[in-house]
Amino acid sequence: MTRKFDAIIVGAGQAGPALAGRLTAAGKTVALIERKFVGGTCVNTGCMPTKTLVASAYAAHLARRAADFGVRAGDIAIDMKIVAARAHKVTLDARTNNERWLEGMDRLTFIRGHARFVGPDSLSVNGETLTAPHIFLNVGCRATVPDMLGLKDVPYLDNTDIVGLDTVPEHLVIIGGSYIGLEFAQMYRRFGAAVTVIERDERLIAREDPDVTSAVQKILEDEGITVRTGVTCVGFARHDRGVSVSVDCRAGDPAVIGSHVLLAVGRRPNTDDLGLNEAGIKTNARGYVEVDDFLQTSVPGIWALGDCNGRGAFTHTAYNDFEIVAANLLDGEARKLSERILGYALYIDPPLGRVGMTETQAAAAGRPILVSTRPMTRVGRAVEKAETKGFMKIIADAQTHRILGAAILGTGGDEAIHGILDMMNADQPASRLRWAVPIHPTVSELIPTVLLGLAPPQGA
Image 1 (spheres, rainbow, N blue to C red):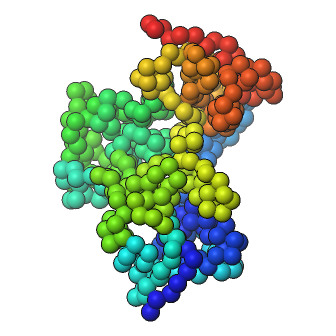
Image 2: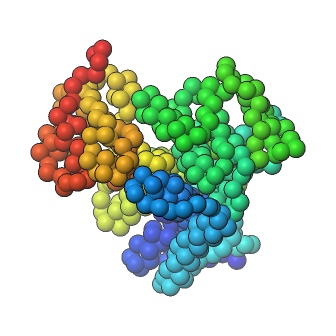
């Protein structure tokens, strides 16, 4: 049996349902295929449950500091079953709302099943063939499971497993010192677990500038998290207390005994079982679908949106992929992926808000730059909240005076960074933001002061 549609969308993550809504509103018949959960990573195993857990961990941390604010809170205890149930409810509510939206969408056929290409305009799902002149892939990513010595012989968790954990580990060993790993590290330390982070690079979150990574590491270590960097070889073996993790590095014990192990070493696209070869769709060496500046694949009439195209690993970039495609197909525009200025955040406490280039990247590009840094101790709002860890940093082009990038590691940094992101999108010189008048007392009010300090980096 063959059914024809105007468009087929594979995957109900952040881009898929929104695109279905625009296409059906334009009078198109659409098939949306999802083999597991509506909402994708963000709703089910990513942003929503993890940030709910982060909020619970922050509440526990603040309660333990109650005396600093003149508040007597008594003994603090964690009921992990309630914590986990709260996160699960947030996921279920969001997923259910998305499902109801799709179920009530005119001209949409929602199909649960596993789709595979059988040709450049055809997919097989549940024993039938679907065809359309426009096909959109929104299939997301999953956790990478590396080939490490002994890993197959021991129990371990990935980011999907750990969001459902309803007990506090005695000792959580995290393999990977980047965004996912560090968020869970601080979270479970605040829930009461001993935590060790193991990272093969010489520093945590190596994509960031050294001053940022050093500050992040100190924040974590100040809370009692053990950080092991420069690990050249990791091995696993069963132990009567859980798992023995061998650590080949220059300092510290040669093995760490953990009750639980979390793998947080990266993500891989869900493209290996879609039959992409049958359609002639090109992927790169890591399995990501290759796309052009308009998100079109190597096959005319097929687009790839969200994490599976390797051009952004965030909910907001996936949604922006939808916006680009919809604007170009339905609104007569010519929006390009290259026009996007990337912003993102690391949700430890305090959070790291980031946009654009790092200082290292800007310097490597060979352009003359200006840099300014100010500690969060200069922010009245941070002092009032007794949350003064971190700093602000802005990088600008010395010739055009356009802001190239910024980092705000500090309370409210994930929100305050948007003032800089907006100025970069507006393509305005730093002086325009310098003369803004931010509200007092806020974190953002220090940004004009940081801009006043822009100067060539030391040694330049």
